[in-house]
Each structure stands twice: as structure tokens, then as C-alpha cells.
Image (cartoon, rainbow, N blue to C red; front, top):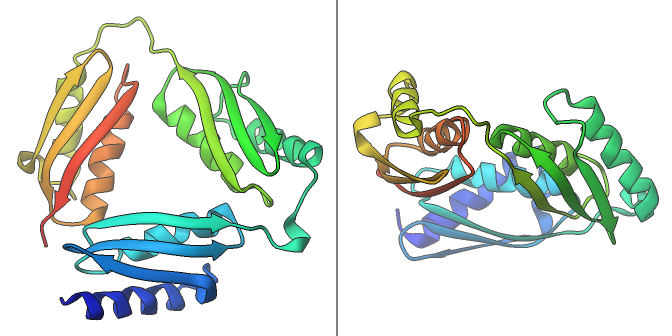
Length: 216
């Protein structure tokens, strides 16, 4: 698909998603299927949903999400009130450890504390980002893996094979001191996201770096 056609298709997809106010979102295309989003949205949730909408479009290889979050007047909160709402959201999520804390300044939330799994860190970030008035999340959460010795590479490779959406032979796994690097090609964004999630969910993984291309 030519860049002009891809650009219009992305715009149409954003306009068709009722969760997104697309009116102040600018779409540009560069290279082979690289989409850049610029402009403003009213919430951090909309920013995330916009990127997900772009991924649904055939031909998109990469998404650069440069959208700025400017909460609507009715969603704006004083920092102290917003911190209380974020802490409540964290406390209500049973997957977030009780020691996770949050500080807020001008709508920017910084999470701190310790977690044992990547999914706990992601759950904390997701819970905070869904609070109205939050403009951005910065995670300072420290991941402390359990002491149990695990074949991380083998665990991830088996998880890839179990997932029906992934061609496990198309993705290679490299591990070193808790860092996982994924390389290869998959047939869809769903497969790419599933591969990354499989790596992040493995025990003792502290960081995942991905170099996965999408081959339509």
C-alpha cells in the first residue's frame, strides 16, 4: 500500500474507534509502514487506544506515538487528590503488590517500590494510567526476581510454542542476566504482542528488548 493510502486508512481507523477523539490527531507515514501520531488527546487511555487502533491497520510496521495528553477541564485534579485516586486504583488491583507507591506532580505520576514479576509492574502502570487526569507514567519500580533457578530461555521458547498465534520458529530468544532479546518476524501485531508478553511473563526476567518485524 502506498504511503498516502496507508495514511488515509489509519485516519479512518482512528475516526471509527468510539474510544478515541481523533479530531486533534495528525497522522504521518515514513519509510516502510512507519506511522507517527502527533497532536493531543484527553487522557492517557486514549493515547494508548490510538496506538492500538493504528496497529490494526494492514501494512503498519511501526508506531511512533508522540501524542500529548491534555486532560479535559472536568478531568483535571490537584496533585494531592490525583495521588489519592492513583493509590486507590493500585490498592484495588489485586495483582499490584501492596508496597507500590506513587507521587504526582502536574499530572505526571511516578511509581516506586519493588515487584517480583514484570506483570506486576505492568499492572501497576495500567492501573495508574486509567485514572482520570493522569498525563504520563514514569515507572521507577525495581524488579527483584525470585531466587529460584529457572531455564528462562527454555521457558520462553515453550511459551511461544504453546501460543497458537505465534510461529515459534520465526522468533529467536536470547537471554543474559535477566535480559531477554527477541528477534525475527511474525505475521501480525497480535503475534508480536503475544511473543513479548510471553517473554515478560517468564520468571526472573527483568527486561525485554524486541526486534520483531511484521511480515504481511
